Image (cartoon, rainbow, N blue to C red; front, side, top):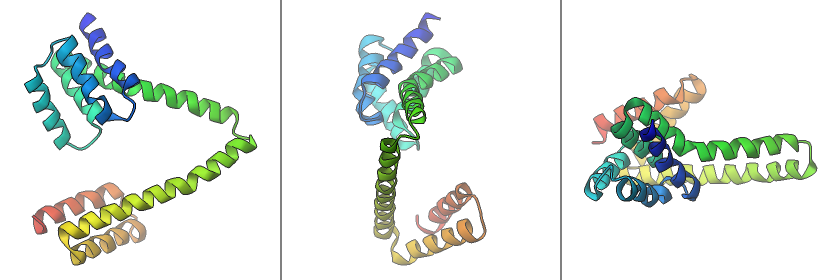
Length: 177
């Protein structure tokens, strides 16, 4: 039981003070698992980090799951991942409850009205960067083909986006490798 508490602390503390997301918490996690608890050497941590970076998803939860599993089995992985997301989860619940309490306030309505276009612009910029990256890597013809095909499948045929993504990955592996 003490080991699970140590796993929790090793990932909860970086989750609280690691402002900036997963990449900002990497040195904090290293300090905990290498320096404080000695679960990994620096070399093992760097290899685990390289493996975790090669997989999709947030880096902090991958590190927590892997190290938690190594030190405490399946329950250790669950505790590590929970400890990583717990600070953000708690803050989101608190902030959403405050927003919900004041949802009819003119200030809150104005704030949410200002946030929506900002998010739309950020999503548009992200989509543009993805398009440019795809264009540079695969060329205009391949990129346009995948964009049009994705549009048809998702908007006209109502295929779930996950299937479109898997299909695009298969297409890329077969025709663009």
